[in-house]
View 1 (cartoon, rainbow, N blue to C red):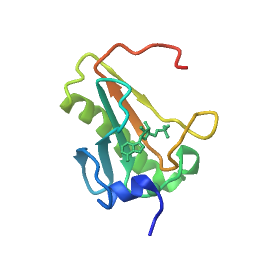
View 2: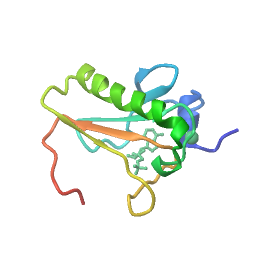
View 3: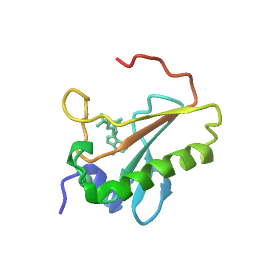
View 4: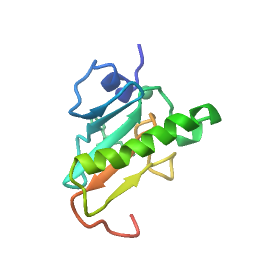
Amino acid sequence: MSECIFCKIVAKEIPGKIAYEDERILAFYDLEPQAPVHVLIVPKKHIASLDEAGTEDSELLGHLLGKAKEIAATLGLDNGYRLVINTGEDGQQTVKHLHVHLLGGRKMTWPPG
Ligand code: AMP
Ligand code: ZN
């Protein structure tokens, strides 16, 4: 059995508050929201990070990004939103399963810390 927490959410072995699901991706609410809307969008396939994605994953990544804007629209983020993919140690990636943070509902700051 996978020890990956996001694989467990995908497999419904641990609960997640699901915002969107199809055969290739799952979107669920972050446990520690950093904005009024904070959803994580993950491929159902375990890919440890963006750096681990291969050319065979290009279509999946495109699907994920295309769905991100649809999910943002569904969640009412008409005034904009931010997508973040933390990658590797300097990127402060803590969960080693590729995920896109969808953040919205407030004005974001720049640069990020
Ligand atoms: P990152 O730092 O980019 O790896 O982001 C990991 C994110 O996963 C953090 O924002 C955590 O709050 C979130 N997180 C960790 N465990 C869970 C969980 N079981 N359900 C929902 N979000 C989680
Ligand atoms: Zn995983």
